[in-house]
Image 1 (cartoon, rainbow, N blue to C red):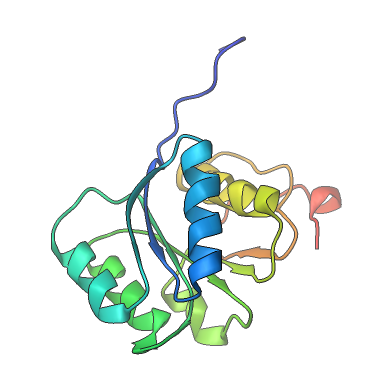
Image 2: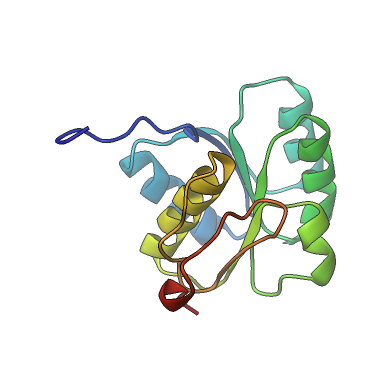
Length: 153
């Protein structure tokens, strides 16, 4: 495609965030970039219910520290349905790699959130990544080669 955008494979997202302002900003940013938000929830129980409902979800963005539990529980439910998860958190634990496609550190710039979603999409499609966004870790199970000189930290 010379003048058009490539069709995205990740379009429908579930946002799991218990900080209202962060949730609102995330939803506003993503809808402005033509992503569809399936739901924005602030509790593990609500996220698990949305996932179990069988909706078409392409990616879950999940905070780890939620009021009623851990984002890891959300990731387990998503993993059972084959839905990739990106943790968006201030402190990404070591065990996150077993449950998620990647982890974006808070605070993050809006462009880094968008670039992290694109990086997960590229990795799922086996495309080579030129660089990773600031504060983002793409986990080995998902990753495709990244050109070493282009890794941003």
